[in-house]
Image 1 (tube, rainbow, N blue to C red):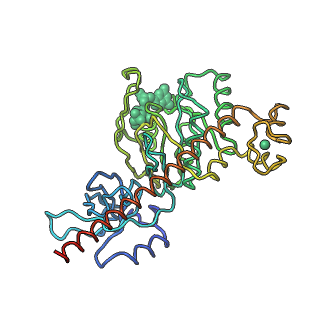
Image 2 (tube, protein in one colour; image 1 turned 90 degrees about the horizontal axis):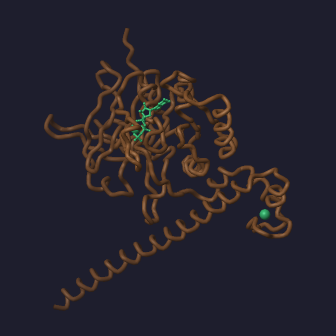
Image 3 (cartoon, rainbow, N blue to C red; image 1 turned 60 degrees about the vertical axis):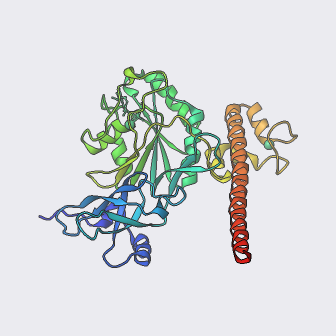
Length: 365
Ligand SMILES: Nc1nc2c(ncn2[C@@H]2O[C@H](COP(=O)(O)OP(=O)(O)OP(=O)(O)O)[C@@H](O)[C@H]2O)c(=O)[nH]1
Ligand SMILES: [Mg+2]
Ligand SMILES: [Zn+2]
């Protein structure tokens, strides 16, 4: 029996086909980026001979796709021009429009986003129950997932070592930081709820994000049913945490769907519009509509419904403090991004002006 799976079962659909048809030249093929390097990427192409599901090929990135703003990211669908002869590599000629794109604020003070993964339906925010759980960090990750338009799921790993009470307490802490989001505890080593991640992926593309050592690659291996990704020994780590996974990578799952493993992230700066951040604090947003002033900062204003609810013990003051801190960070980043853009525009203009001047001098001389 031929168990060849058509490209449709890999997440390809009519929208992508239409976009592909607009950009592709005869002989081009659609491919999905499995790994992206500075000047090339590893792509998956459906096997034209239908002997296997697909083939992995190296594709060169032309100069215009190497620039940060246009570079493909893992999970992207690409237009691939096949190699003309055996020695020349294939070339990625276009990045198809992204359905979703997970981004974070770039490390340092640069006012720009850094793309993490494209075309993800689901993001597993992974946190381990051996001391890693931080409600404030969960909120940061959630804002990015909301901004991307993907579905967030929080997975708390290494649950096997916890008592029932300690587990219930951790779940409650995580859930308080993530109203409306599914939070699950599991342990793939002891087997607690080990089938859960596969059921959640259900043929879609899921990315895993979280600090180093929380068990992202362990989960990926579990989903794959084999040890494909290297996993790290936590005890051998120094204080700063050893990063075992160094590359983002997409892996197809045997039962359908895909997972994207990512290296542990130490920093996760806010890179989200105001509305996406608001989605992370729905219980506060809802109450904010009842404040007397539409522009209430929920500090000491009279008629503040949020402060009143906190005083009555109905809302958590820490959540408000967190919302305000993240909102301040978001505003500062957005303001820097505007300045950054303005400077880039000015630089381009003065470069153009200098060229015009030079040309004029040449004409005169
Ligand atoms: N007991 C237990 N150990 C786990 C579990 N998940 C992961 N580990 C262990 O945690 C360690 C780190 O796991 P990794 O999967 O390498 O962590 P990671 O998130 O991929 O880390 P980076 O690649 O550095 O970002 C390994 O020794 C795993 O065996 C779990 O559910 N239970
Ligand atoms: Mg890893
Ligand atoms: Zn208020």
